[in-house]
Length: 249
Image (cartoon, rainbow, N blue to C red; front, side, top):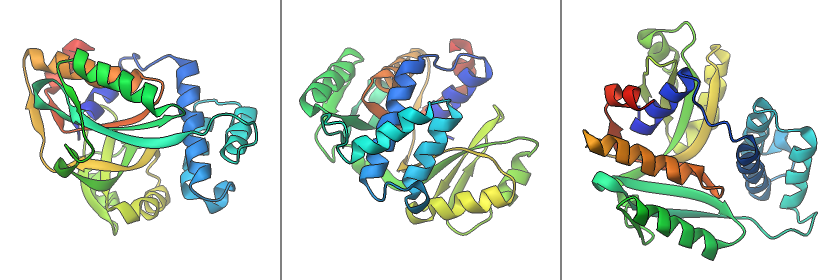
C-alpha cells in the first residue's frame, strides 16, 4: 500500500490519529456539499453523497450539520459557492503530489498551498505537471479484521479489482478500476469485509522511495497538506520505510 497510507495506519494503531474535531467536521461537510452538487440531493440516488453521509455519521457529525450541508449545495443558506479543484506539484525527495481541495476562494487556497509546497522544499506546478505519473483509480480502505493476507486477497477476487495491498497494521488498501468502485464495495460488504473509506482518486504508476532524513521530510510535507482546511485528499507516489515510520510515530 502507499507510503502515506502506512503512516495513517501506524498513527491510528498508536492512538495518534488527528484529534481536530472541528476541522474534520468542516472537511466532511464540504465533501457532502460537493457530492450533493454532483447529482441528486437524495443519498439513495447519489452514491457519492451516500458515502459522504455515511462517513460523516461514522465520525459523529450531527444530523443537522449533514442536512445543512446538503441544503447548502442547492444554495439554501446564501453562502459562497464551494468548488472542487485539483492541484499538482513536487515535494521533498522528488515526491509528486496530487491534491484535491474544496474551497470558496481559489486564489487564497492556491496561495496557501504554494506556500506549503515551497516551505517543504517543493513547488506547486501547473495542471498536468505530475498527473501523467498517476492513473485514475478507485481506492478502498478495508479493515483486516480476522482476515490474513491470503483470505483478504481471496475475498477481493471480484470484477474490477486491480490490486490488493495488504498491511499488517490493521487496515489494507484495495485498488479498483474507476467505474467499479461502488460495485466492488458492495461485493466486499457482501463478504463481510468492512470498508472504512472509499474514494475515486489516482494511483501512482511507479513509487518513489524515500529513506533516511527524507522520510521525515516527506511525512511532514504530506501531513501539512492534509491539515489544510480546504484539502480533502492527498495522493502521492511516496514509498516510505515502515520501520522509520514506526520511529516517527
